[in-house]
Image (cartoon, rainbow, N blue to C red):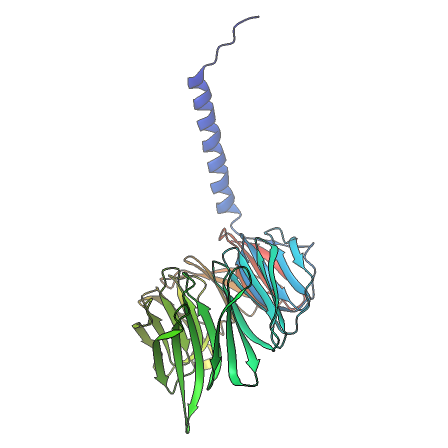
Length: 361
């Protein structure tokens, strides 16, 4: 048998040439075909979508008839036939919490597998899951204005908090599973005020209570480093890990129309301006303004991944940078109900009332 000799230098050169050709082809594809509208023909049309989240580099939808995970080809790759009234979900890392308002059951999935299914006994108002699978559920109760129950990743109850006054608007659990943040709105005489309360679960002890007068706090959310941010109709507030105020951004009387906190370092606020127009502002996690943009018309939906920001105006999808630069991506043939960037930040699901599309940008 003849000896076979390999010219390793020639092989390496050939591999490098192929790599260069592939890279050049990919760049050319981006240049000459920067945007495509994919039909998503296998995606069932006509369902009512209540929420969308990015999950596993795809788009996760909560609809009347369950959960649907859609890939960038518009195909449903995972489906949960779970009918909840007024469904909602909380998505964090590998975990998905799924339930519905006025329901008495919630389900938690990890990596698309059901890990917890639990009965609450009372009607559910809202719920959240953190990156470790710990969940907090707010339910109605005849003995208080609300009951917050915290569950570990196995679904075992580990803490209860009865709220005697005020209306709970949001909750979250710290990344280390130790601190519960509760925002609520209360009435004191003729005035309205809001509080954010931080509670050490293991010690059942309040570590901080922040009160804001003439303000309605509607959201509170933890960052991965243990800091958190809250949003009201008058300001955005940043907190340290022990619940102390780090910054405050006053809205100066402007009307907040929508917001998105999906990216920790690109917090997006949208304000109504005159003649139905919108001003977008982009902040980092320290409350510093990164940029702004005065948009013509009303911005209806915002989705953020990293520093990539997409928004919709009627039937048009716009892309923004945090510095305030804008590019019109594509106009679709239907009104846009929701938007969701997929994890690779090159595709997005555009949800309509009767039609849905995946766009590449």
